[in-house]
Image (tube, rainbow, N blue to C red; front, side):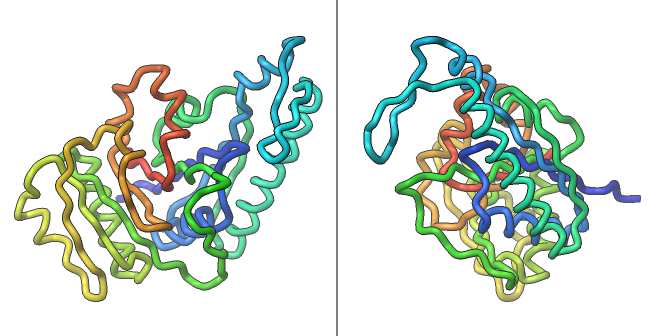
Length: 250
């Protein structure tokens, strides 16, 4: 009997647009997966806010002001509440089971410490980011980037892609690989109505994801095992490498 798919959504104050979350909730519905929202209060910012010389600079006015711990806690509570309401609203609309919890720590290390989940990082909210697509109640058509690595997780990801393609959730699939793609893999992918592409790259290391030039709205899917070898510093910096949503397959 196939075990239940569980997807953990890693959220903080700079991640989780409505469009990205709607895409994930729709994917979860077609995969019969449950969702677990995990909101991380950045422990480094909380610690810094308690220092007497800590300050923040407005990105709009350039104004400098003291960074107080109480103000930081209040801001974090507002952001986590908004994230929870949005996720629960979208999940309810799609009839997807969803839980939500808040933890203190760093986003990527905290999310990756949870076993038994695929992990979804929505990508960073940026002031000069890719064009903001308006979320719609209609079914989104996803451009998916699948990273080949010959691992068991890749074959699980391949099965997910095929299911989403058959249900019309995915419109384009691009396979990225450091090597020539085995013929048996290519033969498994053609699905009516889905455009299939192949691109050979020098590196599929997680730190090189930021150098990819992908269409707006692309979702990267790859094996979670790639992230087990990252250093503590690389894991801490991971969210800032992500201009695109990322799903890690366990």
